[in-house]
Amino acid sequence: MISRRWIPVLALFLLVVLPDVAHACPVCFDPREENRAAFLATTVFMSLFPLGMVGGLGLWLRKRARELRGLPPLEEESSPEE
Image 1 (cartoon, rainbow, N blue to C red):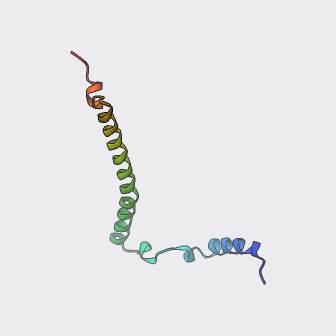
Image 2 (cartoon, rainbow, N blue to C red):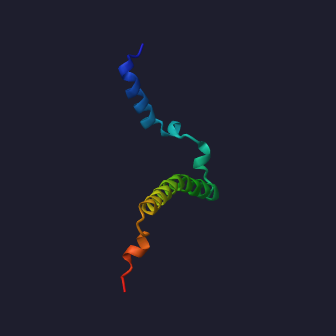
Image 3 (cartoon, rainbow, N blue to C red):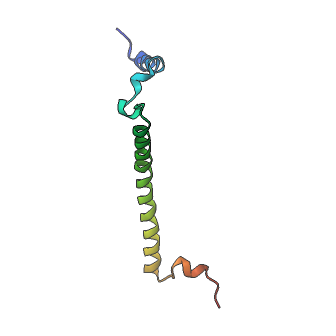
């Protein structure tokens, strides 16, 4: 019987020797360029959209906090006074 400490070593060895086993989804590696481009675009969208939402929420909270404190919006601060 294999000792428990050898299981991670064996799993790593199998991933190195048989990398095709590690693929999560065979569709993502479709040889057709159209499908690969669609999966890449979807991956980029799904990665950046939540980051954009968090960033937008942060900007909105910053603006709302400035409004509640009675401070002018940031655009008015940077304009030169005449």
